[in-house]
Image (cartoon, rainbow, N blue to C red; front, side, top):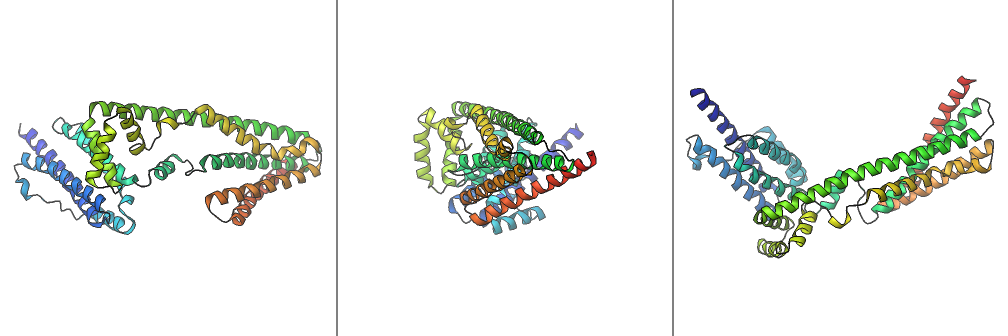
Amino acid sequence: MVKDDKSRKKRYKSYLKSELEAAALYSALANVEKDVERREIFLELVGAEMKHAARWAEKLGMDPSSIRPEFPSAKLKLMKLIASMFGTRKVLPIVLKLEADEVAIYGSDPEAVDLVEEEMKHSRTLKNLAYSGSVDQALASIRGLPFGGSGSLRAAILGVNDGLLSNFSLVMGVAGGIEAAGISNTDVVLLAGTAGMLAGAFSMAAGEYVSMRSQTDIYENELRKEEIELQEYPEDEEEELVLIYRAKGISEDESRRIAKTVMSDPQVALDTMAREELGLNPSQLGSPWSASGSSFVAFLSGAVIPILPYIFETGNFAVYISAGLSGSVLVTLGGVIAAISGRSVVFGSARMLMVGTLAAAVTFAVGSLIGVSVT
């Protein structure tokens, strides 16, 4: 019995320390946050964590009014320094991890399980603070997708570029090998290039399908969970929407008015929460088959360029035409990609040509060495 009591008190002390550390961290972030609305949200989180801390203090027989969120740890000082130098958003991913750990601990303790929902709400609030004003960029970065209105064009150009670079290198490698081996039959190059083109295109298409299918499944599951939350916890979801709008700089009164209007229509509420909380557009989750087909065509379009001369020419002349044609397209692609990215077109073209030439030269040299060893 005594042992159980000691274990329970030890657990309460751990919870109290964790809550006070969290409150101290949010207080520190509030002190360095320049945006008024965001600062108020951090201060609200301080109050919520202190409320939890008071609960554990009472269980330990302590006076709740005597506890303070003061933990000058090295970690807290470092996070405050980073936040003051680069903004609070830079440290929020770390804070989200700490909140997730707290949810996991409370979820396994019957005496604390009722706090899980509130801690999860804190996590959602922090996520909104982390990505507010730049949700699309943040999600695009996480998923490795291009951002902006030119995203589809850029993806297509990069697909063509992948096909061109990979097959250009393959063709040059085989060409170097047969030349060193004293073989004049360029059909070997055409055969190898065609095989590489088809293998690469099908591989890219299959990979894109699996990736998009998995991504779509995840997004649809997230939407289902959000729909359930809207049905079972409408008040919590409305409050969460208020926090999202406040994090964007809208006043509290206006945020509540907008949130109430949105929540009055279940479909609008789901669509809004999907966009604001998850960063998803329910009507534009993407088609795996369409993405797969686009990837296949893009790669094929680039990969066919190095082998075109071998269809009509033979001997070294075909090698020179292939290199010249591939180089010209690389220059064009490099310039277009640079223009889309807002960089120097000349630099982008030169860089792409240099990379392609280096890759082709290396594979040509390796092919030549293998050709010599074969003979």
